[in-house]
Length: 268
Picture 1 (spheres, rainbow, N blue to C red):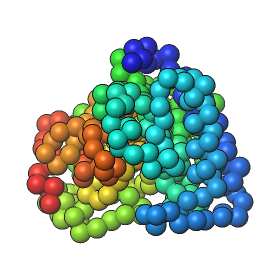
Picture 2 (tube, helix red, strand yellow):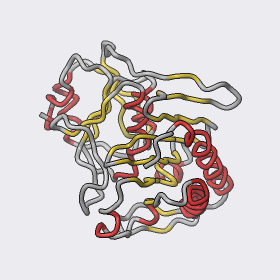
Picture 3 (cartoon, rainbow, N blue to C red):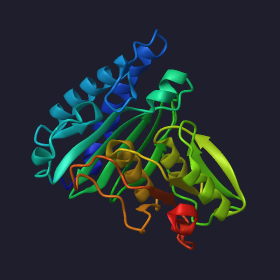
Picture 4 (cartoon, one colour):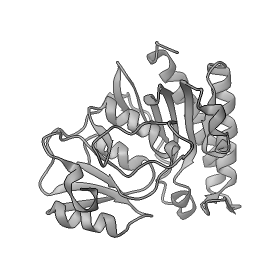
């Protein structure tokens, strides 16, 4: 497995940015929307970004397999033997893309022994990059500016800043918020919800609904390298490629370790 993770960061950020440029070329055009098997929209931008990333990663690390949302049909029998692989969502937040609110991302994570050890989350519309790897920390780089280190809020604010989805909300989250008490919602789409916790702009992200592994891996690496946690409702870190099922368990993202964020609503 690759030990020098820091040497991979810059080229992976470059690959993510190239994919983001492919997405932006389509963003202002008429969208040719298809429906995938799980009824989520698939756009030409998905495909263009997928091909760009797969080509770039194959050149960078030809020995490491790539598992992308757009190649989701790779059978578990094949990927079960992978102890290192790239986990990619070429366009996370296709609903946000179609709504044209800019809150969509390119996600690239390196998984080693079921854990995300490197993550890049590129935001094409903002020309912004969140990136991190173990041993180096987590960083944010905005257009034309130098990258700066980011970290979670180690003490939650009052009222608690809760980041939530613009596209998904349900009874489980409502029950969680009711038991949580005084709070302020910070609406956001895609994996940017985890990134807001990573940079200390939100205190907790309770995800009590379905997500797939490629939705979260890159941003989980950013959160963890920024000092936070992404845990299931039993308090255990989210792990990857451990079973045939691609859906994550429900999870909570936070930076303040002084309280049990899993105790509220149906999470408890």
